[in-house]
Length: 139
Image 1 (tube, rainbow, N blue to C red):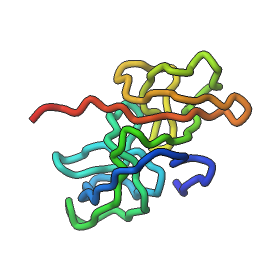
Image 2 (spheres, rainbow, N blue to C red):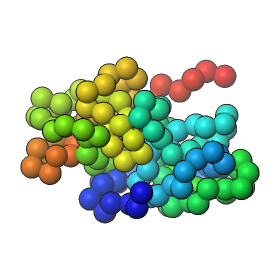
Image 3 (cartoon, helix red, strand yellow):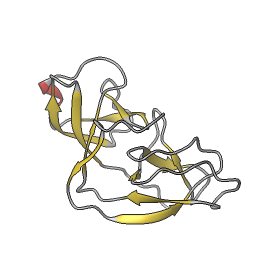
């Protein structure tokens, strides 16, 4: 999936970290939400995953875990714009939480993980402004 210039980073202070990439990922594009694959390695997030940051650069699939790294925004202050994976957004979503729908979408119908915090709604463009609010796992 190519990066869509309408989606991704909007504003906020970014905190960046170079993260090693999991070999089982699909190719990462800028703006993809990332999750953990093999412990300690990031991969492209899919529906129902817990996101820990957003890719700032593209990254091809590495030949082995950690053979490539990607720059990741891990700030909880960053605001991103994404569409829903299905359906239409409504103003009633403001200040609610929901789940990841895919690497560049949210699931406005799921609240199992509640890791996406909606801080803005644009009904005309069918997008929301979000912040990532993960609950990291313990060691």
